[in-house]
Length: 197
Image 1 (cartoon, helix red, strand yellow):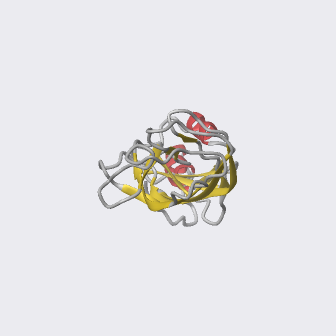
Image 2 (image 1 turned 45 degrees about the vertical axis):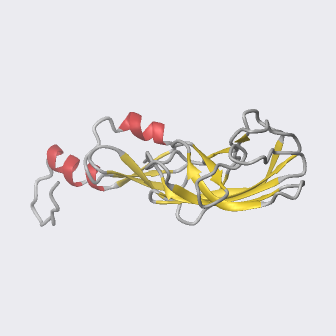
């Protein structure tokens, strides 16, 4: 797209207006769906503002990428399972996004029980890029009302979930040990990872 400085007497043609104005301004849309519907053939470098999330998005030639919201945190409700889904409550679990970087923190308390000898799995707030097998994305601490407290690393299971490693050998909490989610237990997480887009 050209970058043009207009001078007196310049003729404004539709092709020039499309390339120099339409494709080089930041256009507001209520949602990403509205943006995608309105801009069927985006141009590399194009910008659009998404008003429902107060975020800016840019087109990299193949996909839209979100920038921001840079200063806002979004409420997040993680789901923790241990084969079954124990009754749980979330306190002050939030995440923010800076470009493709996701930073999330969560506190989950349990009032129900999991299923013994199964891995404890937690959902992520935003879909991650396809991770390398065995990659960590954060840390956790687990308070066990039965006094088997744990702390360690959170590791990808998929692009939308993680489990928890409680030692340096890659053993998975709930599967590699005898820990079973019980009423009165609590899980605190801190994640930082790359979003898929």
